[in-house]
Image (cartoon, rainbow, N blue to C red; front, top):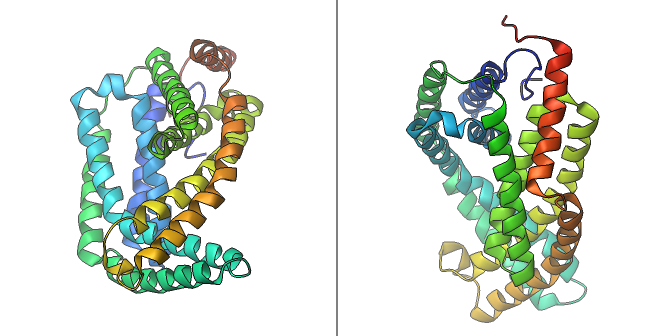
Length: 306
């Protein structure tokens, strides 16, 4: 429930509540990261994505404060990202090695070599105590400032932002799939995740509608994620770095070609889901979502505070 706006409580006050709740839980994750670093950091990164998605809903009201807070959250996410990104690459390399073993031993060997190198690098990239302390300090500052936000309970600006995210998904993924452009698909995936967080936030107004769509969006997100991870591997082996020193140019090419080959079915599946899930025009989609919220508000009565 901490991620969902309660109908009848004032949408502005509710948005402040779920942002504050998310920040508190993220701080708690990082404060206890020593107990289970990988799981806690993964949880913190997920929470930061949700918080940033909710910040977008209030962007027009926050003015320059929006940029300040989103930059702060982005900086924390980047501090936590290196280890998680390496973990993702290791999983991809290991999975590709297993599926390639029977078909192409040379590619499987190259992938196993890469996985071992990445595992050694991972131990060096996990955020240390100092980095975690700095991240907690940054988030604590955000939490204190959120307390002083003054947000309207008129739902219009929030649904303006909702529509903009939906429209952004359509533009980026349409171009990305049409031009086979991994960067636009990557950016579109980020907006798909943001759109899903918006749906969850609004879901109390009409659970059957918003949660059903959020679950369908999850399927699209997974296909996009699998494609994005494979293309991240292609980009990684195209760079220079310590994890690649044990790989010959030919081995890098073998890995990249295998990843591209496996990525294409995921791209096709994602394209089909996208064309179904985002066929509705942005204004119509926004009108339907805002109408459901307004109906729920009308049934609940005037906004009340605790």
